[in-house]
Amino acid sequence: MGKLVPLSGNYAVAYAAKAADVDVVAAYPITPQTAVVEKLAEFVANGELHAEFLHVESEHSALSAVVGASATGARVFTATSAQGLLLMYEIMHIASTMRLPIVMGIATRAISAPINIWCDHSDFMAAADTGWIMFMAVNAQEAHDLVIAAYRIAEDPDVHLPVAVGYDGFIVSHTIEPVNIIEKEEALRYAPKRVTWFTLNPEKPVTMGSLASPEWYYEFRVQLQKALESSAKVITTAFREFKQHFGREYREVDGFYTDDADVILVTMGSTTGTAISYAEEVRKAGLKVGVLNVRLFRPFPEREVLKHIEEAKVVAVIDRALNPGSSFVGPLYSDIAVTAFKKGLDIPITNYVTGLGGRAVLKSHLDTIVKHAYGLIGKRMRDIDTHYAFVGVRE
Amino acid sequence: MLTEIRWHGRGGQGAVTAAELVAYASVLKGYYALAFPEFGAERRGAPVTAYNRISDKVVYDRSPVIEPDIVVILDPSMVGREVLHGLKRGGLVVANTVKKPKELAELLGSEYRYATINATRIALDVFRLPIVNTAMTAALIASTKILDLEHLVEAVKARFSARLAALNELVIRKSYELTEVA
Image 1 (cartoon, chains in turn yellow, purple):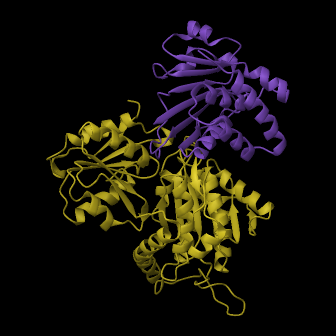
Image 2: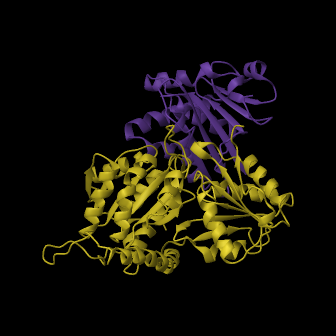
């Protein structure tokens, strides 16, 4: 085990890509992600990382470049935020259906308009249905660890899917905190470079991503769904091995005080930390509040989520994004609600949209949510008029 | 133990770096620490705010610091009640000023404690530039003793080139000696 060094979330991600010994980096700067690629460029310039650093003219090109490089068998990395991720959107589908083990960091940020550079999960959630495996880290250490785990998972012969690791813009990307840096030798022992996927090779020519007529296209999409479903097993294995190698334990979801909780707050990203701190405080006053952190968002870990919320009286889902006009409103809520519905869990499951565009998520906001949720104890879903509320917004 | 610190300075004075150095010294002492800026675009000369959360346990809370235990003021022109909002009763103000702690108490109120240092003078003597961030980190440590001076020196050596680190060490040791606490 190395020692703890103070590092920002962005640098923690850059150090992870360096430890994974990536062959090709292509990225375009955008706040709050920029420091990741700046640091990687520095590593390459100093000779600390022997990688091809491609300067591209947009995020569309950045992801296209790593798609091409990955298709030749290279280990690749890119990172982005907000509008940059939206510009990659077209290529994200191509990367996943071509089954390329690309790893990307997403420093989450609100999407325009109006222009806003601050933390929000709208970008991450917009990419949630592109066929990528998606993680959300709660702090810099997790962002570092999950990027390394991402290579172990993506390149597994039973997976061959791209992986995105989200971490909150500014709140994690720009906060300095103690991080245990994994060194290259250790990272490569855990996630050895082995090219297990089909590659472009002039000796054995293949075509990738070409036309698939109605006779064949459908099968590609079904295979993508099946691949995501079966990646769950590899993710569990990868986490178990991660603990064996590095001592730190990760799960698809984490429950804090969920065992006896009346109200469970379901959170993602840095809000999880604030929610844990809040729960510890109010438990002293006798409020049985639990926190469920969703680390793996795709494939959605239904079984693991259910285990924690089954016994709750109210489940309060906190979303840092909004699907305007949808039946569910918050994207995390939709997955939690469907998971519960499929098992006939008839307790109030409510949605609280908060923290958009960098609006701070305060303990007082969590208190408003918990008070509201407590008022619903004993009710059933059909008794509730409105399933969602905005918290911390100007009236 | 949880200590929350808010730093006030102007763009270019190094408030964010000061918070980072304090986080570094905290980690060296075996504490868990966060350092974060007021998120957004930074401009030279404009007011800058940065924060620390330091604890002997893992810090989960990621919300902004609203009620700090300590406020550190890097710029003498910013010493005033405006930067003390939310400071806990009995909290500590560490200010770069020519005034004595007693004078600050009269000026800003006796519900707080005060530590002062003429950091600008020390920085000008050593750097020939009014960059006071390392002086103020030393003043913070001198007036609170929550961290060790040697850890701060080590943090500075890790952060700066050998030449700059040597100058900063000089500033730090001098500032540590000259900090006045009421």
